[in-house]
Length: 102
Image 1 (cartoon, rainbow, N blue to C red):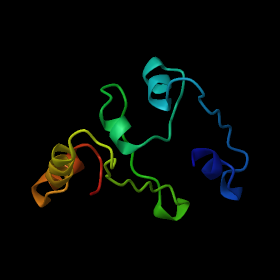
Image 2: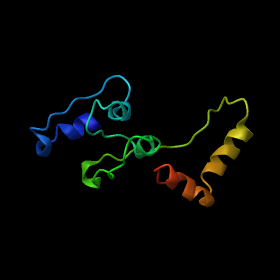
Image 3: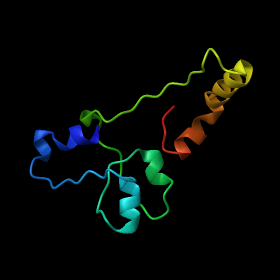
Image 4: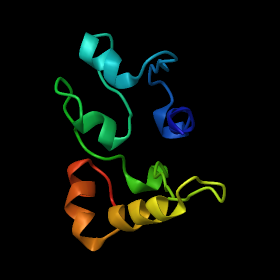
C-alpha cells in the first residue's frame, strides 16, 4: 500500500526508501529515517516517535479488518465472547486510544 502511494504521480521526485527489515518506526527511533508511513496504532505505541497525522483519505490508505473464528476452534464460546467483548459500544474509547476506528 505504501509503495503504491509513493509511486503516485504527485510524489514523483520524492526520495523514498522502503524498509524491508524491521519497521519505519524502528528506523525513526534509531535516527535512520526522517519520516515513516505506518499504521496509527504502531506510531502512538512508540515513545520516541511523534504522530503528525493521518494520511488524506484520497490516498486510499485505509485498512479494514474483520474479526472471525475458526469452525474448528477448541473453545467457540470463548471466541464468540471475546469478539462480542471487543465490539461493545463501551470499547470505542479503547479503540481510539490505540489509534483505531471501530
